Length: 158
Image (cartoon, rainbow, N blue to C red; front, side):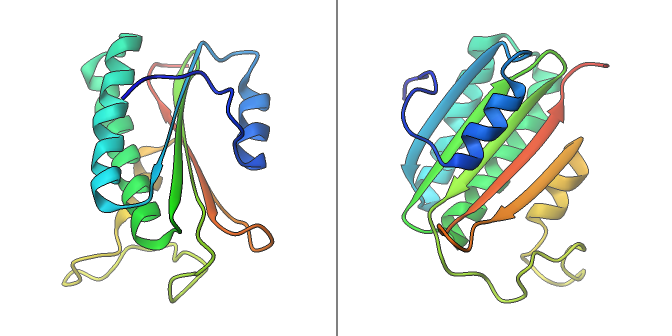
C-alpha cells in the first residue's frame, strides 16, 4: 500500500476536520478501501507503515494502532461498502478519522456509552477507543449515509 496525501475527494466531515487541524498538522496519510474484515486488518498494517515512516515511537504508536484497528473493524462490520482511514500527525497527537459509506444503523443506535456486559464477546470497541483517545466523536450522517469517527490520540505531553 502507498501513503498518499489527502488530495482525493473525501467526505465533508473529513475535510472540515482536516481544515481545522491544518495549521498545526505536519503529515497526512489516507487509505480508501472496501469495508471488509480483510481490509480492516490491512488498514492496521498500513497504519503501522505510516507511523513507522513518520518516526513515531513504538510506545506512542501502540494506542494509535489499536484505535485504527477498532474503528476499521467497526466500519467493516456496520458500514457500507467503502471506508476511508485518515491519519493526521499533529505536534502532540495523531488524529484518526474513519468514515464508512453505510446507511444502516446497528440495533441500539445511538452508540451506547458503556461497554458490553462481562460475558458478551462483542461491543467493547468504541468504549476502548474512548479510553485510549484524548477526544472521540461519532458523527452519523443520516442525510448522506455512513458514520464518521474522529479520535485524537496523544503522542506527547502537551
